[in-house]
Image (cartoon, rainbow, N blue to C red; front, top):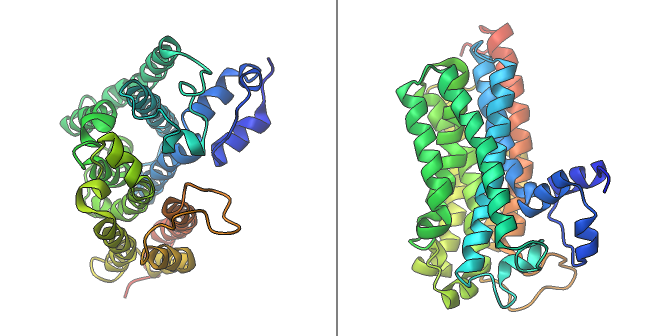
Length: 342
């Protein structure tokens, strides 16, 4: 076994398909963890933390050490949740019979790359690392009530997302809250020791873009979930209603940013750069106007992913422009504070 840096990079950016156990066994530990936890998706956690870090830097509250520790901890926590998600669904019988989850990426339990005991060990080690970062945040903020509350809520969602929240149709809401206002405001609080309601609102757009992926994925596998008794939001409200909610979520992303620019003027107009993501945004809205095709369209390489492919592409483009805008906005706020007095 050798360290495969190329696989680290690849697994961090795209979902990996692999059928040969010998190929899996030859991978290093980090590569296996990145693939098993679907790190191409968990990268959204890093985006949320970077957003919080930039907002903290804007007010002079940024510090590298707590930022790195908390970001790594949350990234690992997200991966830990995915390990638990696969373990729970596999042992509840959901991920069997060529279920949706096993079709778009490596599922170590389904493919017998590891067994339940292995999965539990990976969960414990990942969970311990994530928890240690949370404990650091508690000490760093002197056990502030806000930190304790956010830490407790995050732990609750990590443990209860797959069951029962997802089964109750609440999983999508939890995704929005965690990767939007809670994570972004929480990291901001750890760095600055202050609470700002504009930061809470500033966390909404990215949280909506992440939730949009989750809703879209659950629409993609609605029939499979309904057959397995998994009551996701699209299962409970129907595909058509879920598609409309997703369209509204994408529109609300840009309305919230426009509000923060023009009403409280928390952001400078440079933040309107996010509207350059209009093409993938319109693509998501347009594709949601019709039900999922019965079979893969010609030239589509990601089946059975359909709606979630468009939502994922939008999240990547929007997230990139959002961070670019935040960097420019922070530089203007810090070094030219009177430039945008309007």
